[in-house]
Length: 189
Image 1 (cartoon, rainbow, N blue to C red):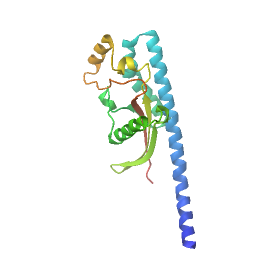
Image 2 (cartoon, rainbow, N blue to C red):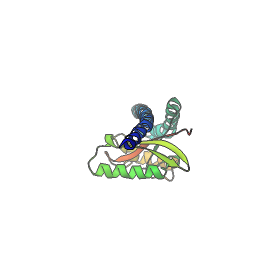
Image 3 (cartoon, rainbow, N blue to C red):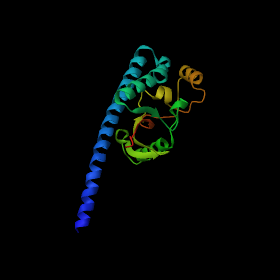
Image 4 (cartoon, rainbow, N blue to C red):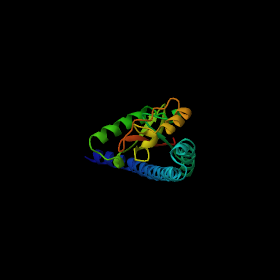
C-alpha cells in the first residue's frame, strides 16, 4: 500500500511541471493565433473597402507572411497558416497538420462549430519534441470572393498569374478553409 502511494505521489510531482508548461504554451499559442487572425482580418477588410477584391489578394500574399513573422518573433513561437488545399505551396501542411485538418473536417461534419475546432498535443518528430496547436480557420463571406466556388473573372486571372498551381478554391461559407498552426520546440535538459 505504501509503495503505491509513493508511486502516485512521484507521478503527481513530475506531472505538475509538465502541466504548467503545457498551459503556458497553449496560452501563448492562443494569444498568438488571436493576434495573427485579428490583424489579418482587419487588413483584408481594409483592403477590400479601399482597394477592391483584386488588390486584396496581396494581403494574403505579402502582408500575411509579415504578420506571421512579427507574431512569431513577439511570442517566440513558430506560427503559420496551412490547409489541405493550399494556394501558396509554402503553406503546405506537414503530416501532423494534415491529420488534424482532416479531423477538423470530421468534427465539423458531426456538428461541432468552427470556433471549437482546436487541437493541441506534444509530439516528437525526428527526435525533436515539440508542443503543437492548431485552430481552424473558417470560410467567411469575405473569403469566398477568392476561395469560393465561383470566383469573379478578374480575380481568377490575377490568381492564375500569382499561383499557377492554386488548389485553394471551391470553399463555401462555414467550411474549414485551413488552420493556424503553432509549434514550439521543447528544450532538452
